[in-house]
Image: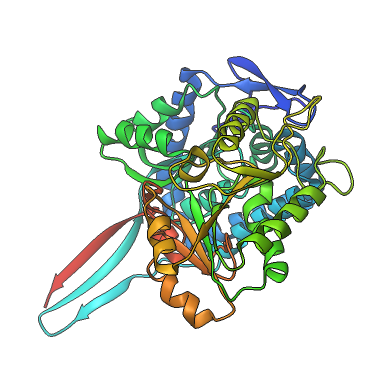
Length: 467
């Protein structure tokens, strides 16, 4: 039960209130966590605003040096952060370790980027340059499924561009963010990064705050709509990475035994609590039965347990609200399809659900049409690939999708027809810091990662000089 603190203006401070953080594997209190008040949110924003002018003028090389120093301290404390991440989030320790060291790698990636002045016209009559200027105070709101790596989608590019940040982690997974604040407080000037926590009651105030110039939010589509509405009054810039209902389409030339493990991983990584997890799988009728059988074998063999235990492949759901929602979706699916693996909570303490495969289910059911965000995969039969793509596109979501085939050219022709921000061929949910990522339709606005993601933390300024 470490003594966790908020980070405001370079100082570690107690919250005006406290709240309990539970371990989802044991349902026991893991730690007492500070809970910021509205006044402390205002203090954090004021600190970021005051720090902005000097940080914006800090040479790019110095800002890169700070990002590398943050990466160093994350790596140095990697094992401690990973263990804490497993305890608050639930994921297996190996996965948590990968997230921690991946976070450091994301910080290092952004140090390789620059924001050079771009000349677009250098003619007899004029010279036109494009400059990228920092925006000001950034509000970064991070969800509970990947508390560190999703923070690293936002914090490094925001800082590199010369902005200051108020970071708000999810109420159920605040501890790794607070620990990070403790580790980096002396790396950056006071106020450049501030970290506050809440009980889902300060998001609106942060979003509407007149001194915040941009909100970068990752979370549900419903909450994203509230963020967008809250930002409207002050015309804030927004980046929204929202929900998804990613479809995978398996063509008739695939070997089910060879492909099923990759499909299973695509759907069940982090217990399905991934915005770009495969959430519905369309399989050609000629291989449907065999594919269902292979997926069911993998689901039955998966080791579910406490993420700190050796050999655990899938931990608990992260919180009781999500646990109850997934159980409800499974019960509804039993009315419309056939459960061939899993189908129930594990029983006992902890938010554990056995990985579940549902076959003989169709579009129009909750499990197929909604984002389950848990360890449940519907497998839907189709006969015409063009029809499968049309059914995949019928969703209001458009985050990711994939086509699986032994003929990549055949898959590519279908991939370009999918209405989603990312489409993979013979893989799913692969992200890298240099690859832009964003959703279409109700899955979000804007882009994260890569040069395009960095640019979203800047204001474009055109300098047009007469000659």
